Image 1 (cartoon, rainbow, N blue to C red):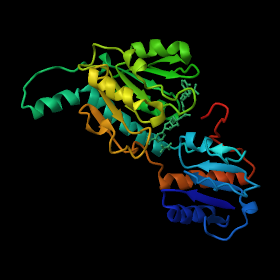
Image 2: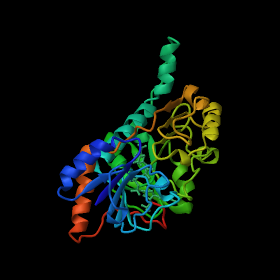
Image 3: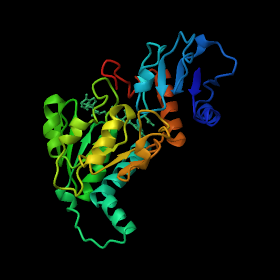
Length: 312
Ligand code: NDP
Ligand code: OXD
């Protein structure tokens, strides 16, 4: 039996579609009558503290989110494998966001927008894409997809990951020793890391100060589409104010929704979006999670299982 526990998501709609896809396999929702011991899979997004109570025969926890940092912090998380969402549609949406913000900053949007407001005709030629280096932190599913879509646009690309990665046309850096060399040649820093104890707070003033200066007018740029816990918002505000950073695009925040009194709302060269870079689609998600359950029930191994020791 599959149990749904989806907060802030249309649980009824997911439930109906999963029941259709899995029929005759039983699917239940919170509030339905069921014996917790019959639940073999639970499908979660922002599970409440009691979400896993009594689920003594769980075969897997299915995470609607690609990022599992909050799930791993759940106080009553059972010791079952966690399967996270890995999906072409999700990757495409994330890359859409990354490409939009990288190209916007590469073409000095902040500068020309300000010029237009001031009715100022001031010619300044942005560097060619090839002269601009985009550094992607996190070369997993989403980082690799973003890189694949930025490459044909002509950008010079580099990546940073925990273990060494080789991708055609991309200069790879890894580990602690590779971090500063990676930053020192980066003009636009894109964060697609998972949030773990090792990556928390990585977007800080010290990091910003190590990025390359002199290529983009106004200073280097950061694009954070991963997690708010990666960034110090006080440091971002400071760096945007004193020119250490030329601009920032932020989709995620330390506290969401971003509090009304956050200075980030009003900073001209800060582009705030409300955690919408990439949504998990119901259409593709139902196919993905139902096939994982069917395959596992048929004796096949689970895929995209989170490594709890690594934290992602
Ligand atoms: P993956 O697990 O596929 O990739 C993670 C990458 O980060 C890997 O390349 C990994 O290195 C690298 N990494 C992990 N720890 C470190 C470290 N300490 N130092 C250097 N590199 C490290 O994740 P995804 O690409 O699927 O997703 C990334 C994140 O995007 C999610 O965790 C989530 O937080 C966020 N996200 C945000 C969304 C939004 O709407 N804003 C939507 C979906 C996801 P290695 O390859 O060596 O293992
Ligand atoms: C995710 C997210 O991790 O939407 O999937 O942030």
